[in-house]
Image (cartoon, rainbow, N blue to C red):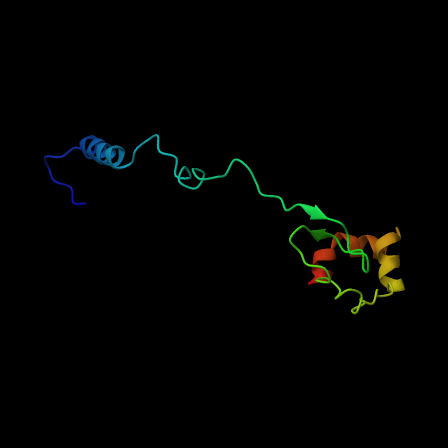
Length: 107
């Protein structure tokens, strides 16, 4: 902004402040729009009896055999890797380093 001889610095600052204060409402929450439609309750699926073949948890609308085709499919349970079990359960320096940096190793 150019400075004219007739204007004072204080006058310019007062005018700019008046313009800024009139352009921005002082009591408007910018996140108000985000939080206006939050539901009061949540929907939780009702559980049914576990599968008699694989013992998987089921919900009410799930059909029989959905998880394991009535016992036709059997998932193999992997054997735990001894070195990983040691790193997870031991208290030595390597194990502590592994647990402290688990996100790095997982990546």
